[in-house]
Length: 133
Image 1 (tube, one colour):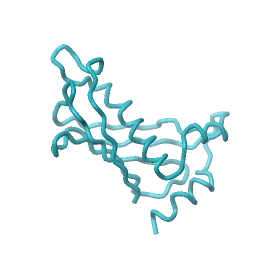
Image 2 (tube, one colour):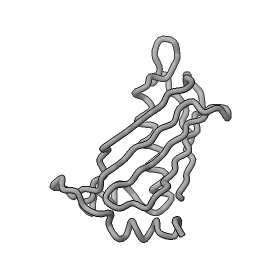
Image 3 (cartoon, helix red, strand yellow):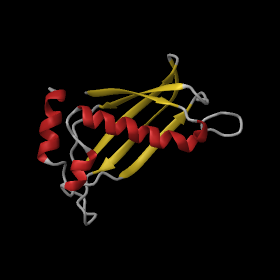
């Protein structure tokens, strides 16, 4: 299992007139957390794309439990529970002051630049393999 934790400060532009973070604001937060998780394991999104590998979202699910509001610090705990094959799934738990405010997951397919599905590249499997031993 691979884990990471990322803090996000809710910006004013991400809120509605009541000061509550808009539901669409959560998706970029997940992207930041996912990028940090991969970077911590030596996998850079930029280098993936330079090598011709894309990771588009093919499924995403969010459960909203409590609001995040302007100026809150939201901690996003990200987890990869299974070895990637043709897809990679990342689970998320968003917390504010030790309360879970949202949870969900995203699934990403490995694709080449022509949009064809591919298996997870060897270097990704190798970088993540030790985490699953």
